[in-house]
Length: 114
Length: 112
Image (cartoon, rainbow over the protein chains, first blue to last red):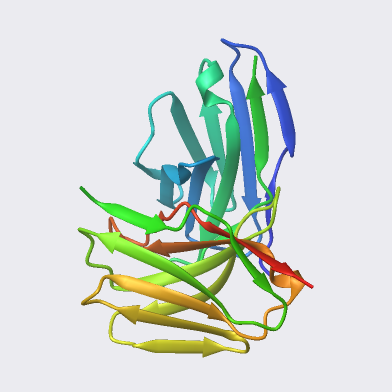
């Protein structure tokens, strides 16, 4: 079974702090994704990576950056956390073999920025 | 503008009945559509994929239809059980290259 793990289930940070969210997948998937999920807005794509060191902006990249130095690991960075970044953050991966690949999600990190 | 719409109101049904959830989209031409289940506090789990040239797909008690003329997908759970209670998300390849655009989900509540 594919497993996607995220470094924390719950995180509380202060405004202005630098925040790192880590995601690791164990199935040699090419693609990795970071989403945030908010009530009424659904899942929104922040960043996408289709290969090591390759990244592409999603729909809401402002205030975020990402790093993918190894195939299995995809990090989301909040350079200076703000209260409007309080959200559930979900990481996902997919095989990358072609169109229609299912995405495998991690359990999520609920981030609160005070 | 581009939109994916799922009924935001919860769907309440009795155990044993068929649940039908709707996903409508506007200004997309998806090659496929996927359905996911999400339990509270957890990440979504993939259920089914249906491609644009397929009218219907089945998996156990689940059935998905895809009507590209109506720009709609229907998701059916037959003989529903309380364990089917969850939020169901539809997603399509709206912006290409293996990226998905998700609907906001519909919460299903199956009562005994």
